[in-house]
Length: 250
Image (tube, rainbow, N blue to C red; front, side, top):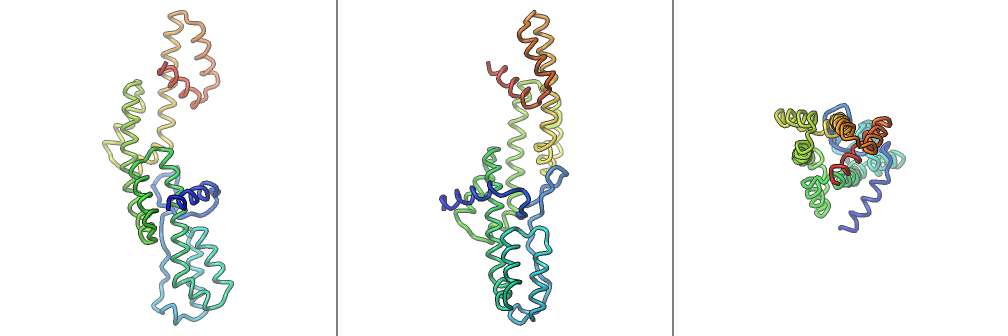
């Protein structure tokens, strides 16, 4: 199972963002990924009794859903190119299997990001899901379990960032995190970590640089003054962050 998981990870990380993979949404303008949904075709006619037109209509409804993943899309298209029996087979079993494969790829993509961010609960829950490999559990977790697990991991990450910010005197970061924790809205956590945090940290880092510059000028440390002025001239947020981290650790 772990070998299969590693193979999925290679496939997932190689896929381009243009591929439609079913993933749950965290509200916010920054990411706005698709909401995890499964199409339910409204018909009281059993699949075995559907006419060819009804079969086609049911499959077209699945294809029309913008959240249908690559596997579902390919399997549905292949079924439409086949016979009525092929379409029935897709609606009865093929759709479920294709959706499960899309869900696995979506979950492994989430796992890859979670491993980069150190999101322990998300990692643990995904590993359990992939070990059990039950399609219905994959779908349920994407729709309900993932938002809960990610919210908990985001709170932990916010607390870690807050601790570091308090040590460094990063006023804007401290203020924004405290406000987020007071409101306790998971969607706001995610949005802030993705877009608000880089902006707040960049501002605090610039303030820290100017403070260091003033001290260096006062002490006549020309080398440090030149180094900081170079950073301020380039104004590269990532470079400034890396420099401050190394400077504080020295």
